Length: 290
Length: 238
Image 1 (cartoon, rainbow over the protein chains, first blue to last red):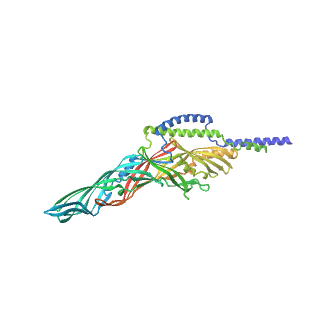
Image 2: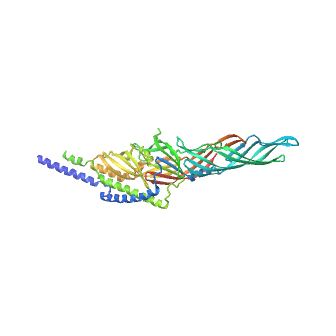
């Protein structure tokens, strides 16, 4: 009896095995290359890849920075940005002449009488055109530019000559061409600061007027502090401050996502000039905005 | 009872892991080689890297910090198979970027738990002012089976690999990174009263330089991505 049961059990085992095997082979299997084929391809591609990588790495000399984000701005782009300031407009800078006494003063004696001849500027305005601003050099932490400005305007002049006073309006010409340097700095909040390096600029001024038959040619070089004309320029480097990452969800259909906002926070930034590129580097963290 | 041992014996051994592993390695190397070959050819024509006006260089940790946010994210591979991302890591090679995603998948109808590794190509494109990271799966392979009967494991794996690879990118939508690269510079205005030989007031009005950058080139090099941009439009406003 026991023998009969054992035989039945064995028949059952064989039957179950047959069903299982049938199921295994009825499943469509993934077509994979054999291990030997794959190993041979791996060896071939590794060798070829090494060769190509060596060529590329020699040409690219790849590692530009140790930071996670680096921005290289070429000299040509900085020049284009500077140059844009000199285009389109003719009135880039305005100089107002305020009352200035005795720009010319001369004590004379006529027929034994002493006179003080003088010329005052009463008022005036000149619109100056930034003719050009050209980047000439980028080295260490400095950007050097040459700036050319010129303009014409009118001034009101009053004068007294041998005791007789008169007022007249005259044309005036202003011209400035000088080198302006900016120190490149990095701020704590991911900005590049172009800070003008203090210097005196020489504004050439001239007018010529005839007043009371007195010909008055006047030329004057006026020293201007650069800081009076240009403030530090801030260039924000807000590279992607916010990003929404899509998340698939178990309870949603494929193709439907939850979006979670994150902030990219740049820190530890530094700026330098390297091979005539303005180089800004920083690390970043990604933090949940919620 | 003895019959059950046959099934138990084969439970969890539903695939040849070495065969998958080698096939995967070979596929990745082939892809890397093809991409590197293209890059090398391109560099023969123009060996100047970083010739764009503006170059944004992203270290591979930039990518990985973004991708780290997907660890433990879950979703559905199909109506009966859910997954959880256990690990995601991107590597940058010459000419290509590849992300490997380790997934734990569970098939409800067959009660199978299987760990998978999915390899994806990372593509970077520009859409308006956004840098768009697209993740395209090209390979999926099982690594370990933690639960399930042989035939169920095999069927689940086959289904995931054969049927789902093409649809997997539906689970991986593009990651949009707004590229607000300093598109405006403010030149602050100044007003100075100068009392010297001539009394002057100098007005330098505030100006706003607005410009657009457009992506002209994206280059994958070992350990870094270089996005080359050029000045598209520049204007000055008062």
